[in-house]
Length: 153
Image (cartoon, rainbow, N blue to C red; front, side):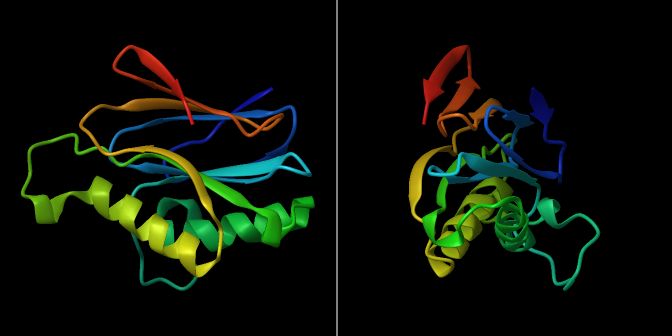
């Protein structure tokens, strides 16, 4: 079954489910336990919030990663076995470089993955094109469709 991850959303599931989303400057954060074949995806819009308990933790990178870890653990994943993949973070509009929300989303995700000691095993980030992302929980493969091409991370 295909589970659509909405903007600002967060979903977790077990194999053989497929998680999918469409991205621009947002970043898809995908965490996966390869041994248990359990994974999750957050579709984060902004790098961070100061709220300690936001209504939609997937909306912000700084709350999405801990929320994913918690939900995956409840589902049976082992936090010390998680790996990560990232997609998105495009600069969709011409803006000054210090206003590049896409890059800030990616940078924040990478910092938090390091903090939680989750290795980043693949990414397709940056650029200026939207992406359609499919995360296959049977094997952890991520397909990214961008500009008429499909790549696997």
